[in-house]
Length: 370
Image: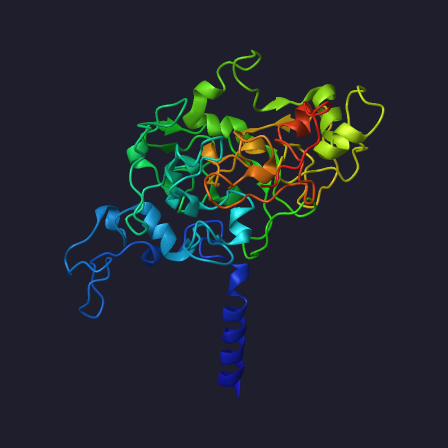
């Protein structure tokens, strides 16, 4: 009887395993990623290589990203590389970092004449190199834009510490060094469960608290070197009362243009309650994953306000396509995955830059569907 009870208890531990992820906030079991001798029962373990032949760092695959994808490739929860860029896993494509599958797109250019001037999917986000997925070194960029991190070393482990840091999404912390970069910030955030395959919503989303922009500046410092000027968009800075008021009032292009009195700034019917837009997040020290209201003047704009960390189906990992006029135009020229309209049903919705800048107040309301 005692033996039976122990077996039942062990089974319950296994069933409950998803609560304790492979990394579990720290180092996982070593042979999940490495092999000492590339041999088990006389068979090579290293991606089909013969016994006695292995890869650098005793990895199971030829590169670090492919090692990560051995578990994180595919559909469903905690997967970040869907099978089809035209029909990606809705959860991974529209939450947090986005989906690396868009690196496989043949064209993500939805600007006018985008069909005849394709932009390859390697511009959809961080061009991680993976022998498993067939993605190579970025053909345009030799280093990180605004910095010097080498493009031929881009991998999941450029941002995430596979041995664990105990930090948000096991991202590197301040003081940790990777190649020619040393992180000078630590991201403070709370994430929605990785074991959910659902997209973020306006009331269930990652909660970014602080450190994001300074952390990204480790490899993109030049984008942050001119804060306070009109040459580069502020990042890591307080929104201020004016921008916060616009965010809180704005409820979409049609709402902004139609709510009287026209010409009164800010435009829109929002009152600051229930106006949080997961597609345009902001940083705030008091943020929670269920936070639904708008920002205060002390809330901050950050890199992730406009970008996702992995990839999207628009250039530069944009949370929306910056080169199109209306959100309903997304995917029309390129035939790539259509990023969902953050204001469903409003076929007149313009760029989400307007969530903070409301430049569509006097625009003609027109239908952008093809």
